[in-house]
Image 1: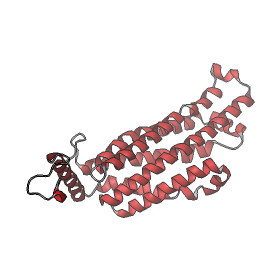
Image 2 (image 1 turned 90 degrees about the vertical axis):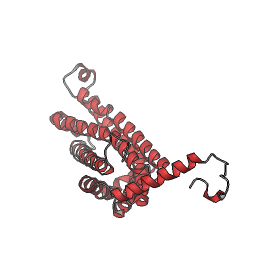
Image 3 (image 1 turned 60 degrees about the horizontal axis):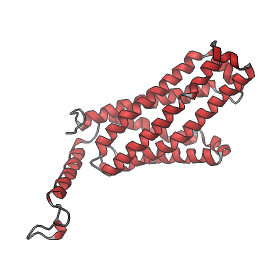
Length: 265
């Protein structure tokens, strides 16, 4: 029924649900728990926390890496599932996911800096304790900037996905509505953090509430139920019929005895 490894749309949707659930849990652990636990406005406290809990810090980096890895197959699977609804918009959605993931993965590089600055290697001896603490704090600030940048792209991805779900009827429409709220929340937070950082701090954690409801709920639904195969098949058949009809009649050519309004159908 679909070209991706011969899997059915329901199998693909369940795979997407599993990957998305891993993504949600990994992100909550890496950003919601590890960074919140270890990072502090005081550079000395942040450095001390990372030094004392290096395994936890490394676990957060590993979880964040898993999140970026899962985003790549998710982009492909969502494209396969929704290209029958609107191929260009499904492709645009995939691009938004991949650009956001590239920013997210690139941002992980400088988050390894505290491990070198605060460790026992030669790099740690090149800086005074105060300098190492300041650079560690800077790494945390840069991680926050990375988060702001990729949430803008994720917000646009979520809005595209919301529209595709609303039009497709592959899943209950309540998830499309929740995803729309989630995508808008991402965009509001991202641009507020860029334009008025002092205001963005007051938005959390309220601005983050749609995410677990929309993304967590969607991942569980896909994992348990997949998609409505009847609607998916209808969408795929409709798109195939239109594509074949367009190919059979060259542009500008009207078959004898057939009204021009019916060309391509």
